[in-house]
Image (cartoon, rainbow, N blue to C red):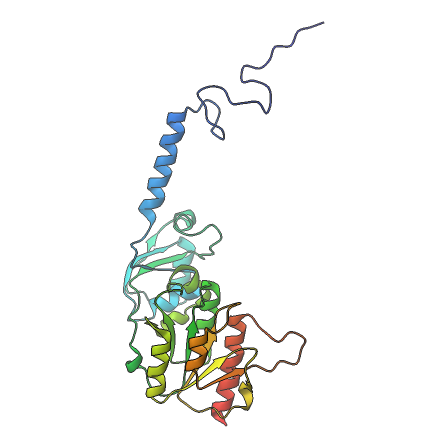
Length: 286
């Protein structure tokens, strides 16, 4: 019978040869793999923007920022195709982009981010104070809504219905950057974000300035469409699952529901915001 020698690397699925680490390429030593990991970590860290930076990516998000004179850019990257499209559509920029390959932008973003060839690092927009808000129209008040996709979508609806501001807390809310900015699709440039330390106190200040403050909850006593709404109006939305906190609810002038004809009587908070803005906008026009 012929003899078969065992491969020097050991049987398939067996332990790696001495001097290698699991998952490393054959022939790679611990020291080489560690060096590569340190290099990759250092490279990723070198691409991270400063903590006070707003990261904006995607076509609508970046072009809206370019059109906003209050948005101060720190870095502007674009691919060849995106830069050509900017020129073709006569979209001006306060500074010329640095032309890079698509993977140079992707390396700065989460794996699933769709950047469409545009990336900006900018100063955050200024946050106005409650007393600086115009006493006309509508504002939205967000009670610890933490999902950036939801908050971004709420910004987009707020811009569509000409809301004058969104009020939220400095803690327990996402920053106006990255995923939130992408979901907002440029709305951050049109709707001011007011950040406060104490939401109930901010709501009390709105009431002192003449705002009608209406909380939204599926168990609310009144139908929002039936309420006698007036401007200035503040609509208050609670977090997914938890809804309005008790102190927030108690500070509202009233708590209303959205009457829905179907079997499900509650909506995702961003969808509820869009519907509430439509109902309130219609009510204020009456």
